[in-house]
Image 1 (cartoon, rainbow, N blue to C red):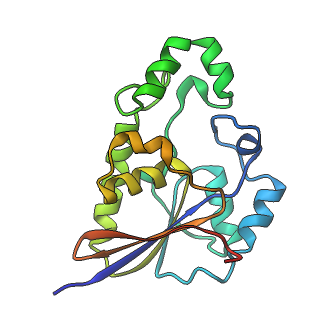
Image 2 (image 1 turned 90 degrees about the vertical axis):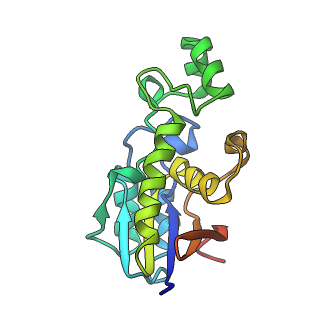
Length: 193
């Protein structure tokens, strides 16, 4: 018997790091980020809510009306290691060779003491596979990296496409699966849309 699974991937709202173009650490939403995601409250009717364990995603879950989501670390942002909390320029000044390798191929090269995009993709693929087996609608509150990984996976897009996907803070991307085959339904939908 065929069933349909729907997953809405909601990117957390902006943080001070987002606004300053810093690699994220575990910062909470800033005031404007809280206001932005609050517009989603009551608009996301779902059977199940999953969130990463970051402060910004947990804040987002609470503000959209879900105080007891399932925490799943597979939906955590890429671990930027030593670059967390720093700008791209600072990271490049600190270790230009590591930055160059990472920008050329983030799937095989990680930030110092961080994670490769291949590792992130593996955990997101595993989480998506699990969600494909459940009929109904799941809301996943996460960051840009996992959303990009999900899109590359379901679209079978080349890895070079990573840098060509923009996932805006506070937007929703919806995927549907029919018998385990995912389709992109919508991308970067704002709460006011």
